[in-house]
Image 1 (cartoon, one colour):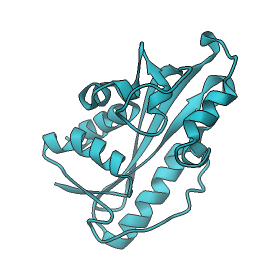
Image 2 (cartoon, rainbow, N blue to C red):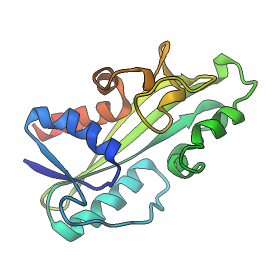
Image 3 (cartoon, rainbow, N blue to C red):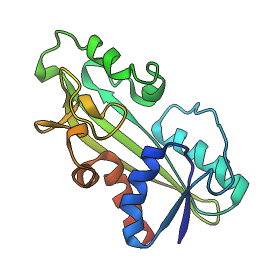
Length: 187
């Protein structure tokens, strides 16, 4: 079964392929499907933003579409950056900004969660939602060379997401948990 990913993010595409392709799904990017779009994510929740992206691509192709909206919520910052995670700071400066905002904050107040909301738009254009969360905390410095985004500062146990192998991360991540729920639905 072919599913279009409503995203141009190569890292998300790789992660989603690694999780769904062994189950027999061919995942193609919106660009590979010939339907690139740049929609304004103006929803107030991860789910709303995922649906906005899915509907845009579905409206062009009328085939099954997956869109996700994901981000980091930090307890000390009352859930920020949340749905604004990608716009929180310039590319390459997000981790530094977050670390500076948590300077002097003790371990017990550095709780954080990665959140992923997936909207699966089926062949009829009906939206189905799947949410996954991974709880951890924010470290004090960037560590590791794997992953992307906030992975180098998000501690899961004693390792950052950027220190985990792709296989390890794909077993515990917010996206993996949401995709597992999608996979169960697709069965």
